[in-house]
Amino acid sequence: MATNPVPDHVPPEMVRDFSLFTSPGMPPTPNGDPHAAVACVHDGPPIFYSRYNTQDGRGTWVITRAADQRKVLQDAETFSSHRSIFSSILGENWPTIPLELDPPAHGVFRSLLNPLLSPKRVLALEPAVRERAVELIERIAASGTSCDAMKDFAFPFAVSTFLRFLGLPDDRLDTFVGWGKDLLHGDDKERPVAARTIVAFIDELAAMRRQEAVDDFMTFIVQAQVEGRRLTDTQVRGIGVLVFVAGLDTVAAAIGFDLAYLARNLKDQQLLRSEPDRIPLATEELLRAYPPIQLIRVATKDIDFEGAPIRRGDYVSCATMIANRDPAEFECPNTIDLEREDNRHAAFGYGPHRCLGSHLARREIVVGLEEWLARIPAFRIKPGTAPITSGGHVFGIENLILDWS
Amino acid sequence: MRIIVQKAKCQGHARCAAQAPDIFKLDDEGYILPGDIEVAEGEELPASRGARSCPERALELDRTPAARVE
Image (tube, rainbow over all chains, first blue to last red; front, top):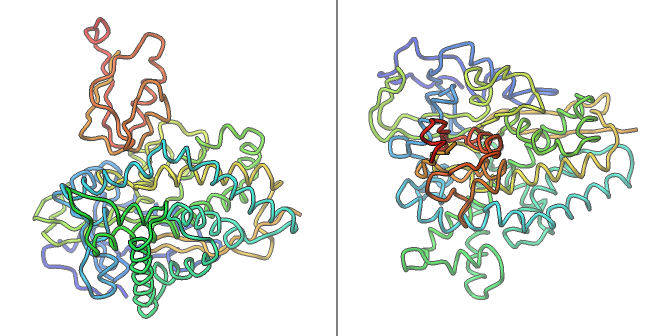
């Protein structure tokens, strides 16, 4: 695996044997804690080079300090996010939008989409989100004293919330989750197949909405105008693919890690159950402790950044889970303190590409925890079972068998 | 007390408005409205909490006497 040559401009002493894909705790691990496992980088230098640190096996600089990640992510001119992360799987080169556009084009599309996921809009979506959570949890509570919280709750809750936002029916939920799994966690054969399937699906959906308008997201996109012009097919596809993929995995993973934490920490679980007003603040701490995403940028020019000779074309990794365990930013970063104040975590990134869905994601986690704790009594990991966790491009938790017998 | 708003740094995290919605007003996209914010007496605590919650460091507290007199 870690056989990439080190580029000539990278001083050998800046190379570290670390990878979000291959380091200890990153491959699928029973009872793993991949977020705690990566926190060990803070024992070393603030910036180093990893020879194998992307899904397609490339080397990256690794920015460990929150303050430095803020600098990188706020400076989209020097650190571009255009790397065709999705289309390159297909051997193509078109950007997902707005993520892989740089300013000023980025701002135009961002302004188009921001109102759809603003705090105000999310407030209006909340009743439906809550209804879905209650429906799923009541079904679980009625059917016994144990469940797989990923399969029975986190995935169907997060994905159906999202499908509803997109205007898609729930009945293909399992199919969509399968595509997401293959795309984000699959091997070199599965990923292109999944990518092609998703593109075909989005293209077809766009064509349908062009023919017949419905009150949904895709209709909005195909009818939208930017600078006086309708969007091109590639732009519609770029938006559709990004929004579709972004909602498949991340919130479910976050809820899974959060419930796993609460299952192992009964005191905290009981505190939130008896005082649910604490859940929004606790959610911020859980977002700090268990964010699923690594952000990658490409240097657009040569720059000496905090002692690192970054050269044009180099990849720069800003892993949110690393920034969130930075001792220079957070007191006792490896202690999970559900009452932590002043918690300016990096779970949704920094800079112009701040997660567009952050307000919805946050509400989903808060609502999910509120309704779960209101309906499920003291739960723990079912003895004899082990949640399997993994690192990688998107950190994940495959299974979470909870028991409250 | 006054809060200096660096509008260009705002990326719409909306943490300030979550802390103190009456002090930190957002536009339809969810980004802070331009212009510094004069904090009314008695609202210093939620205002400073809101300012400190910004992940981008776009909000700065100004406690200089001049700011207080204004």
